[in-house]
Amino acid sequence: MVMKQKRRWIVPLVAIGLLVVLVLALRPSPVPVNSAKVLAANFVESVDEEGQTRLRDIYTVSAPIGGYLQRVQPEPGDSVELGEVLFRMEPHPAPALDARSLSQARENLSAARARRGNALANLETVEADARFAESEYQRYRELHERGLVSTTEMERARSTRDRQIAARRAAEHAVEVAGFEVESARAVLDIASGERPAEEQGELDVRSPVGGVVLRRHRCCEGAIAAGEAVVDVGSLEDLEVQVDLLSMMAVRVRPGMRVLMTGWGGDETLEGTVRRIEPAGFTRVSALGVEEQRVPVIIDFDDPETAWQQLGVGYRVEAEFVLWEGADVIQVPTSALFRVDGQWTVYVIDNGRARQRSVDRGRSSGLLTQITSGLDAGEVVITHPGDQISEGTRVRAD
Image 1 (cartoon, rainbow, N blue to C red):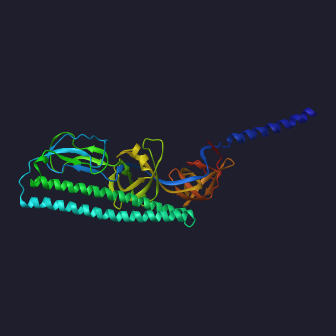
Image 2 (image 1 turned 90 degrees about the vertical axis):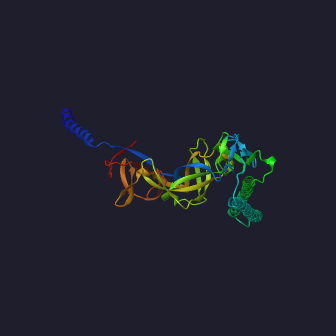
Image 3 (image 1 turned 45 degrees about the horizontal axis):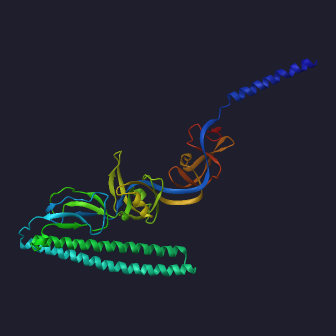
C-alpha cells in the first residue's frame, strides 16, 4: 500500500521538474553589456589642440649695405651677447650719389634717431609705472601681513608688478634695438656719402641687437651680398611662448588668464601655462581631409619659462589642454552611456540584473566623460554603448 502511494507522488514530481527545466531552457539568457560605475570625482572640462613654441621677438639681422660678406662664424644654437659681432663685411667703394639719394640717407638717420628718442621716452614711462607697481605691491604686502587685505588682492598687486617689470625689460630692449638702428643708418650714410675715414674702409662689423642664441643662419659663406639681405636670426629663449591655432568655435570659449596644461612635448612632466592673448583675426586652414577650417591663434605664456626654454626650442610641438572649468566631487558617467528619448537625456541603470531606463540632466562634457547634475548617485552602475537588444526590464550581464 505504501509503495503504491509513493509511486503515485513520483509521477507528478517528475512532471513538475520537467516543466521547470523546460521553462528555464526557454527563458532568454541575459544580454552581455559593457558597464561603468557612476563616479563622484574631480572633473575637468577642457579643449585639446596641438601647438608649437615660438619666440615673442625674433631679430633678423641683415646686411646694412651692399658689399662682400665674410664667412659667418656663429652657428645655430650658439649663444651671443648683446653687441657681439655676428658677421663682418667689406663694403664696396662708395658710389657717386645724387643729391636725392644722399638726402634720403640723411632722412633715414634722422628717422632712426627719432625712433630712439621715442623708445627712450617710452622707457621713462614704463619705468615710472614699474616704480609705482613696486610701491603698490609693498603697500599691499604690509597690509596683508596685518590682515587688512586678502591674499588675492596681494597676488594681483604682485602680478601687476611682475608685468610692469617685464614691460620695462621690453622697453629697454627696444631702446637698444633703436640704438643699433641709428648706428646702422649712420653707417649707411657715412659709407654712401664717402665721408668715412680711410682707416675705417676695411671692414664693417654687424653686431647682435639682443642677447640670446642664433636661431637660423641664412648665409654662411663669404660672397657678395645685397643691402637688406638677411644673414642670421637671433632671439632670446627667455621669451619662449606657445601658439595654438584653435577652431573659432573653441576659441570663443577661451579667455586670457585661463590655465593651460602642456604635454606631448617629449618629456614626462606637464608644463603649465596661462593664456596671454587671443588674436582678434582668424584665418582659413585646410585640414588633412580637405575641409576648410576657421582657426584663431591663441598665445600662451609659460608659468615657469626658465624650465621651458632649457628643454624646448623654437618650433617644437606641444599638446595644449585649455582648462575651461574644473570641479571636485562631480557626478560623472562615460558620454557613451547617454542617449536621447523624446528629447530627454537618458541612461540604462543596472538594477538587480535588469536594465532600468532613467532620465537624467547632463551638465558639462569633457569628451569621454559627462557631468550629471541630477538623476544618478555615485556608486550606481550604468550601461555604456547600449544597443538595440537593451530595453526597459531586459536581463543583462555586466562584463
